[in-house]
Length: 164
Image (cartoon, rainbow, N blue to C red; front, side, top):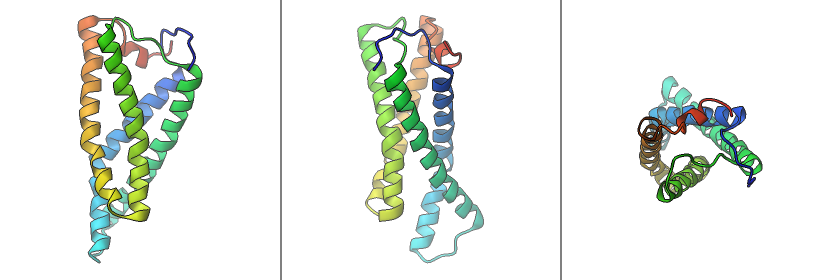
């Protein structure tokens, strides 16, 4: 990782962050359609056009997440990331652990989803466990961003909205 001190993220890093966030939000909201699609196939029932469409979108948005996260990891390794501002040692450690957890889940979820799609259970059951983990991590991430923005007032949130 680059040791150059940065004040903000690049425009591409910001674009990837929000694109991945939108894709994950889509998956969390509409992911159940894939479960309904798989269940219908397993029970020999007809699949509705809406479930077929949403299941296909779930598949392709998952692929998009995997590609975008790959690009984001390459960019982070080559460009680095700004140092946390206004944070104490434990907060910095928590932020680094949360980001690592995001990267692990962002790779693990699509890989498990693909394993479930092509190999079946138990991968599908394991894949569904990622959803609550994402929800908790997102809630902590948003809470941390809001804490920095409104309590510490250190500009952390601004770094992910404006290239620096």
